[in-house]
Image (cartoon, rainbow, N blue to C red; front, side, top):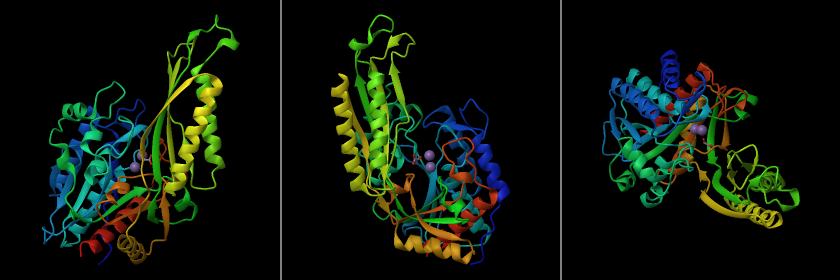
Length: 415
Ligand code: GLV
Ligand code: MN
Ligand code: MN
């Protein structure tokens, strides 16, 4: 088919409009949109209005995953899915996830405008809570849809003020049976997610499209270190069992272990540290810190995780503190489906867009969709590879190219 025409002004306008729905103290392009907040609900309303204007049938499941369906001529066949997420970490940019949701919608509108009639239905999904901000674990929507997490495990998750997942989702208006969110077998014939690369390769190689062949294996853990608090003036150094000093040694050891790994894809991040009681003149008695650990090789990731746990335990003994570990998730990597990859490659070739096959180092809901559907992803470049920052940026041309490639990929997968 001819290249579908993307209304890039409309799409960029919608991305910018969505970015105004934010809790970030800074104005857009800085965005904060945390799951099940008032702001998240307003963003969902905005999306629904766009879906309905495009004539799509909207369905919301028990956890708030939102499906907007363009019915195919054979609606009983497995659908072709696309989409991503609209939640945003604190002080994020405006493209992470949203390009896949609004871009998925625009791909459908472009196919509709081109007179394309899909055989299989095409569905845009907005997954609930891809980001781990509120409950510590990311991709809760796609974990539940794919069966990667059971409802029983989901409701054990709590947010920072101790409210559990079930209470929070119900308060936000999502009240169905969580078990019903699991997709029936064969629901999707294929799933393909459009996303900004969040890394520098495409820009460095001057390429428009990345066709993802695998998604790296992510793990998250947290550590609680307990020492002994006391008066900052009165407790002399030899008597101290400072939880923060012990944690500092542990954080530094984590970095060293990851750097020493034989795998170039191994990355470790401690992004959050809570110090108790958090007073200038009080020795820290308790510290909680998080660990985000990833590698494309799941076995190596697990080996490094074990090594980190051993180091943390050793340092705790050395410093006279106690440490508790909690592994929140340790997911295997996902491999893209050959047919979805070749549909995306053919789309890029037919549009004369430079492309490369590549690994996704960030995780995405597609990591879990791969468990229930043949999965693929299309990446577009973002400036300097920057993401999870307000200065994240993809140009209108880059977005338009990605949406065109997505539209052709969806069209070819609908059969
Ligand atoms: C997703 O946002 C990730 O952290 O990879
Ligand atoms: Mn993100
Ligand atoms: Mn994302």
